[in-house]
Length: 312
Image 1 (spheres, helix red, strand yellow):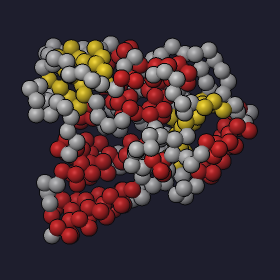
Image 2 (cartoon, one colour; image 1 turned 90 degrees about the vertical axis):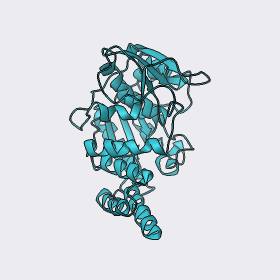
Image 3 (cartoon, one colour; image 1 turned 45 degrees about the vertical axis):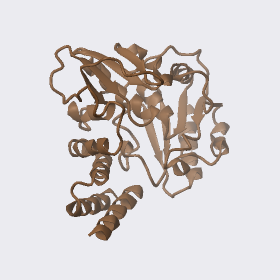
């Protein structure tokens, strides 16, 4: 039985990786019939369903991630919030995953702040950017969690608040002062090298984007200057941002900034769904998907044609 489970489990994630979400669903459902308590398989099936846009089912199963990815608050003195009325209780929202994920989930904070006293814990580079959300901000690095009556992981908020594709809290929801206007297209060509899919989602070199320089001035945003509030100011002074799937896409989308996101053929993240050029999470984004694994030149050629048409 163990061998059968492992085979189905591997089949499921391989199918998900290559974009065959229906086959991934079938394999993981069969795997869970053999081991119904396998938390990674349950969480993985949740991601697959989220990638299919089946949000109510996906969010519920994705809760299994808690068993395999603990936070400093799990099992402590602060109980986890279950979505019941806060009644002015102190709620601590705890971050999960990467910087872009924190930006994506920040859209839920304005929905919470009227019900209780909310503290948003975040990575330090995001603290000033999140300062305009109207709640207390707690940079997580090097300090004990602040007092709270209940806590919630940020990726549990979509389930607790009943998020469907049609009810995603709209963007923009972040603001920042803008730098002086500069004609140009900002670009980010690689993400965090420790990301498990970074070899596919990042470009091999910034030179891949050189054709765009034939129709617009390119502005390198790869090297940070300050924190995310400083970066937000920089990009708002530009005409457009072009980026691989990294935190810059979330930042631009959360600000309502026009942004073109380059997506790999394999290993595309669940949040970008399938076969869409738009994103229900960020209306200002346009998605450019690889049609052949590893072929970024064709993606850039499409972007160049669209950029030339937009500037003509």
